[in-house]
Length: 502
Ligand SMILES: *[C@@H]1O[C@H](CO)[C@@H](O)[C@H](O)[C@H]1NC(C)=O
Ligand SMILES: *[C@@H]1O[C@H](CO)[C@@H](O)[C@H](O)[C@H]1NC(C)=O
Ligand SMILES: *[C@@H]1O[C@H](CO)[C@@H](O)[C@H](O)[C@H]1NC(C)=O
Image (tube, rainbow, N blue to C red):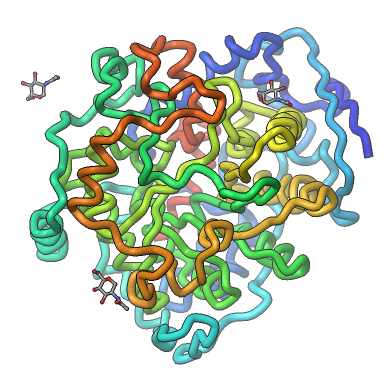
């Protein structure tokens, strides 16, 4: 099926249909790097959310209200965030789409919130995950008491007994944490000296990776499927689709959102998806102190273990924001970083699906990005990992309606990250890992990994070894994960609605 999408013809804001990709990347970078403080203004969740909220969280409060969040305006009333550039048309072909897909013209920032789908099933407390040898019975999520955890969407305090214990454990781990200063908020432009310091191996500014980072699947045409930032209101729609197609994914979950939706996390786990850590409050980790990074990762590990009985051993840094200090702390805490594939500054496997919700890109552009990824995939000897999200209605709609059906029709092998690395699921969790395919990181091993030369791109350009990166172009296009805390009222309000559950 071929789509020639004139963006104007489907009445979507043209804010990101930039003719000049470099200009687009620079603009995106600026926006993505700007990290304003998270909103503290609670807003109502999307209409109909109580179905999932209530079904998924008998301990947490059900989301209040049923009106659409402020910032979401009815279809037809577009509020462009920037002057519309010259008309740009997209041309992409999809081999298949979902017959029940939401029409492309409805996958827009201004879409009304769809009613959320109740989970297909909820696992009973005490159920035994027999698919993971040695895994304990499923805990009772109703016993989860939010009062025992840090606040939603905030970097946890470091003076709690829990965090103090985790700091001790990192100190005793045998890992040396490099004495690198935290970066300033604002990414590469705000940190010219750090961006130029290739020894720091800061992915954000140049795409540097180390041997310890997982950046792809080894086998050609194998897609290590990942979704970030859930559990969330529309995760149940994605789970329903994946189940229908018998697909499994890796979910990088935000710890504080697990408190809001414990039953969704249990459902993902009992459906044999892989659960991994995406921090507690989704900050850019290089901006935090060592102790704060430990708190972010430690609380996420803890809440996942409290809800599932097992602890993940993979993590993804929010925004892909990792350097050798963050790597060492993650490895010291038993967490292996998982990035997304980046072939070159201009070919990073980021669909940018996140930005439809805020009106910063269009579904046409996202499908064009997918098409570009496929083009690059077809020339690669190895497989790949793509950045996508289960946070927003629009990201789930484009995944289930278009990207996944197309990928299936193309015959890609779609599997979770652990599986594309030829490991058993048990080895994706600290408690059940037999250490055969996935030995836990050790201090001496990590020291070697971190002092080794940065990993070279498969295009031979040597990421991170290319000298000072331009802070506005090259550094901009590393595919910074697009989880902004809002540069506009609309985005802020939409965001707040997702964070306002507790
Ligand atoms: C690191 O931080 C310290 C303390 O704030 C400061 O004195 C030092 O100049 C910083 N180093 C670099 C390279 O920015
Ligand atoms: C790879 O991706 C880049 C950027 O998205 C795109 O310009 C290029 O055409 C793609 N390569 C192929 C072979 O499709
Ligand atoms: C795997 O390694 C961890 C950490 O070294 C250790 O605690 C655990 O007992 C090992 N598991 C097995 C099955 O050997």
